[in-house]
Image (cartoon, rainbow, N blue to C red):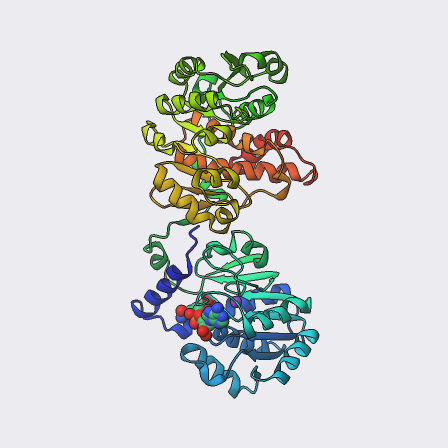
Length: 516
Ligand SMILES: NC(=O)C1=CN([C@@H]2O[C@H](COP(=O)(O)OP(=O)(O)OC[C@H]3O[C@@H](n4cnc5c(N)ncnc54)[C@H](O)[C@@H]3O)[C@@H](O)[C@H]2O)[C@@H](O)CC1
Ligand SMILES: [K+]
């Protein structure tokens, strides 16, 4: 599913109105009715229920007047508050404001101090508040009277339904622009907006409904929208079918280069993640002194001892061994638990520059690339990089707060600059490609904020590449499956679940998607 930015959505509306001749008032009618359909479900029955509609001066407010008309027709008691003067309302919003004026619906302009008391009182007695203050026309920050009315909505403790976007949420990034309406439900029009999925905006959105308001689908399809939301159906199509006559050699050979003294678990979880994602044969290459531990930890994984530094990380002498392994593998996953020894980092860079097969690069292999991202252009296939915000911050020189504040664009820029697929992990993982295409993942939960889940993801993505998926498809499907496995594991309790629980749940997640 595509997710349109505010600018893209405005252009879509414009084309629908100007090129297709759909009157703006018709789109507004459909938008308002879509919200009423949702209200019929969440405030049931509507008759005699009290609604307070908070309207801004633009078309988002216009949707609010349509909602008011339909609610009154259904027997609800409706008060409309307009933040400003009626004379400031124009166009389609004006048409609908005039209609409800003629219907005798109370429209109170919030102009002086006494009007604020009326809003507070109405909010106190309402069953539901409808946020029609700001939609895709919102720019800048929330301040002054707008902040004040949003505070009243949030303080009322009532069911809040947002029209198109919770006011104050940046439609493109999910940033809270000063303050924002905390909605329980949001009905968005035509196409969802990225900011409704990305945190913190997603938390203010509540349950999201995407409503068709009659815009021809071709208008949206022709926009070349590059933001996507990963859907189960798309992952189902991506995943390979497994022949009933399959043997292990048909499901790919995968090599993992991971681990160092004290960090054997990361290596083991990466290898296990790959196996659980369906890889045929997995070889874990790790420092020789970890052999005994890994042999105990892992049953199905083959191990390859590598020369190591005095501190127990892989050494430069390991490079030819790994090169040989990569030549015999369909994919190489490198990084988890390697440690940050400079010799190890240099060995990692040599491996990345020389690898013959597709790469999944994570953790300490990403740290090894700080200041050396130019070597990524030497990779034969598009490498997949899986940084968390901290690693991304180190790679880009930004703070992790800055990375999280604009996840889509930061990932997109990095993917273009490095000629790589960038999987920016965290709540709502974003997968970005060098051509600007991005995918937002919605599976997963806060229980996954625990050590080792990132190693599992690296293994899962590599495991899918081993089975013949392109790095592109493996990254998109991998983050979805990883999050879904987290959701499956969380059914036994979210807090306290471990990466191992997630890894064990991968087959169930795959079964849920593909029934195999
Ligand atoms: N014809 C269309 O384009 C359609 C628009 N629709 C609705 O209209 C919305 C877009 O309408 P508009 O483009 O009129 O814009 P909005 O109604 O989203 O916002 C514009 C108003 O907000 C004010 N504003 C902007 N930034 C502000 C800030 N930081 N602080 C305080 N006030 C601020 C502007 O001065 C203006 O009065 C959509 O989100 C959707 O709800 C729907 O009715 C469907 C059809
Ligand atoms: K709104």
